Image 1 (spheres, rainbow, N blue to C red):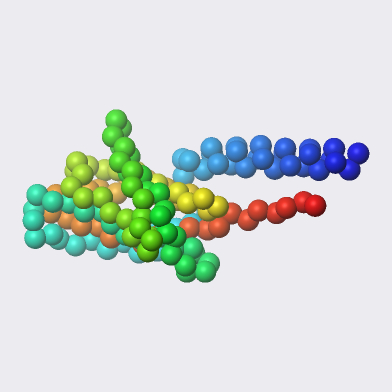
Image 2 (cartoon, helix red, strand yellow):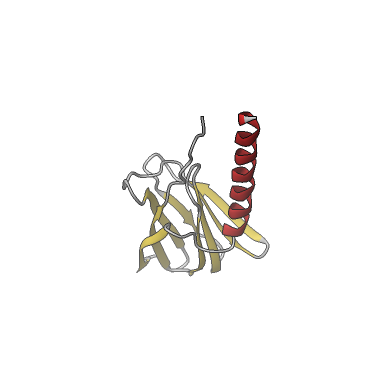
Amino acid sequence: MKKHYIYLIMISILSTSCIRQFHNETKIIENSKVLETTYYDLNDKTSSLLCGEAIDIETKEKLAYITVEIKRPLITYSTSGDSSSFFQFKNKIPGTYKVQFKYIGYKPLIIDSINIENGKAINVRVGLKSKKIFLIE
């Protein structure tokens, strides 16, 4: 009987997390946030750059190999950060993109609008919040 209750609890937790994950795809996740955004001009006016890093918002540790996607209708670019969490997108089609940061065990972060322009560079530093997982014995 005890196992039956544990299974029911686990199923409800899993279904809630699936619903929350789907719901979270459309907005900035609470407690994950953009820490700093810096814009600067490039010498080459035909180039563009979106770069940055991601950290754990609580421990300040860098999130190595984070997945970053930039999206707009009909176009999606994806990259992974390096071992220092540094990522970059060079010379992408100018326009307004949605940026999504994903890391296993962390709440994703979505920036609704970043405008990539020729001759401009954007440096973004974000902090992601760890998902807390509780085990039932």
